[in-house]
Every structure is written in C-alpha cells, then in structure tokens.
Image (cartoon, rainbow, N blue to C red; front, top):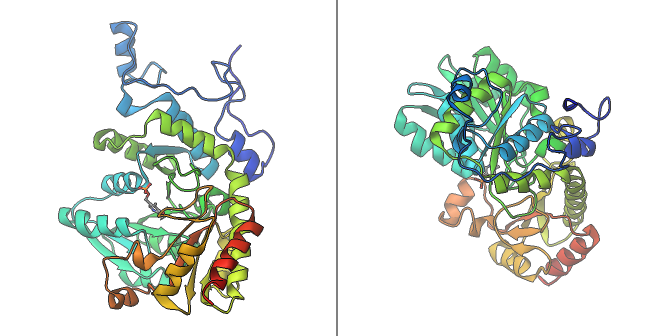
Length: 401
Ligand SMILES: *Cc1c(COP(=O)(O)O)cnc(C)c1O
C-alpha cells in the first residue's frame, strides 16, 4: 500500500493543529508516529548502478552524505516549511548560521545590502565586519518604509529586517517594505525569531525569506541551538547548495528536539502571549516603572502595525525603571521565578538588564546614543502561570521601596 501523501488534516487548520501535523505524512513509511533520529555520516549504495542512477538524479533516495542531508533534519525542515507557508526550508546549526549562510549565498562583491537598524547585533556585526570586507556595500537604516526608500538603488539585492525587534518590540510595515524592495527587484528577508509562525505570517505579506533562530521559541525549551531559513523553492534550494559548502549543518539530535518542541508551539506561544501581556499591563500601572515596551500595548509606538501584522505580542517585554541601573539590578536580583540569563523564547522565564548584558562594553553615553536606557530591564516571559509571574515581579518592584 503506498503511503498517503502529506495533506492538511482539515480544510483550514488552526495554528495548533498545524504545529502538530504540518509537514508530516499521515502514516510514515516506517509506521513510527515520530521521525527516527538517524545518526549517520554517510549512506551506502547497493552497487555502482544505483550510485550512477543517483548521480543522474534518477533515484529518489534523498541522502548521499551527512553534510548534504539527513532524514531527521529533512523531517524537521518539512515541518518548518509547512508551518511558515513556504515550499522549502534549510535547517542550520544556529540562528547566526542561517543568517550568514543566507546572506553569503545571496550577495557578492559590489552588491548593496540594506539592514534595518534594530536587527540582531551580530547580524549587524556580520554585515559591517565580514560582508563589507568582501566588497558588499552595506547601509543601515531605521525600520521605516521612508528610510528604506531613501537608500535603495539598482545595486540593492537584499533588504534585511527583523520584527518584533529586541528589546523594544518594534514592528516594521511588511507590505510597505516589500513594495519598495520590489520596485528595485531586491529580495526581502525577515528575521522573525521574536514572532514565530504562530504570531506572524511574513510570506503571506510578500516577504521572500523568513529566518528564525530555532534556539528560541521553535525549539522552545532552552536546550538547543539552531536556525532555519524558509521560502519559495528555487531561492531556498540555492541556499541549500551553498549550505553544503559552508557546512554549518544541523545535527539529527537537535533536529529531533526541534521537531518535538514544534508540536507544542501553539500552546506555548499562546501562553507566552498571555503572560507577557498581563505583565506588561501590570508594569504600565506600577509607580516604579517609567515606560513599558510591548507591541500589544496601546502605548507602543508600533501598536497599529502590531495589530495589523501580529496575532500576539510574543513573550518578550522591556521596561524602564525610574531608579536607573541600580533599580534594574535590584529587580533582576529580587525575582524568584525568572532566571538571570541571555536568550528568550523558552519555557523558563528569563530576565536581564540590556545595559549590563548585550550592551555592557558601551559607555552609558554610547548606550544612550543608541537608545539603550540605563534603567532598562528585558524579560522573556516563559510558560509559568501568569499569576505567579505577576506576583513575583510585583514583590521585586515593591522591594525598590
Ligand atoms: C538569538 C537570535 C539570533 C541568533 O540566533 P542563535 O541561534 O543564537 O545563533 C538571531 N536573531 C534573533 C532575533 C535572535 O533573537
């Protein structure tokens, strides 16, 4: 009996149904409900005739050598591509590997790359310190359509943005951005790590490629590092080709953990959304807090765009304390549930002071110049009970006296 093809379980499945079933055959060839973890560096051929048939593309066995593909990795890629609404995905060893591999395969000397100013710090560093060394012309502009319009030119090949951004949750006008890029036949890439395919659907708004650090919400359990790039077939296959050369491939165990994490994506992101909104609302009313940044608050500068493009605000929020750096330290050290750590998007709540973590090497003046306030605290709201998190954060704020 031939296996039934991959098909959506109902006409237009909801995001949690999709997270569980997308990209999977109803019954696998091997009849296991989960994809097996295949630990193999190479895949032997029956004989030379089979080898030659494979080399001519006449044989449908997909694997040849571990750097060019692995069945567990392929299962994870199929699920991620389907969840994001793309044709294909390339899984990588980290989020940064997805970003570097994608940009290296799409740019060459003389090409122009535009980044929006609040993209991940290492993405900016890669563009400024590495791509520029190889003759790529880099412009960094504020995340607005007008700013993009001011710098695009015939040589512009890629416009790279991110949403929501870290730590202020800025949301760019996706369709406006795509419109300007298309006029110049430039490709658009979004790092949608903070949004997840649950909260945002960039491909439906015309974006060419979506990148995630799967380290964050997609893995979701603070137990792996990974990345993915998703989009239409030909462009992703060109990236896959380069990926086999650059070599930052995902390992099967991590692919399995990512697949497992993805099954609960809907449940987890709903809880992240709910918990973060509740804390953001509480913080906004607290006398120790000067300002709160969370896209789903009406006070957020991009609230209109957030309402248009996001289903929920995700788990990350930022707030500024009246008491400055010292007040931030008091709160971060007084909370009992969130742990003091970098990263975001996992089941455990995490808290940190951006001026003492991501921006530690800058002076207070330099931090001020790029908008990083001394009293800033960033929290990644996990999936603990929102009432417990609220009570905990409240006792920490009250300890400021
Ligand atoms: C963490 C992160 C990255 C980098 O991902 P790694 O998996 O740590 O390499 C890139 N972009 C965003 C928005 C991130 O949060």
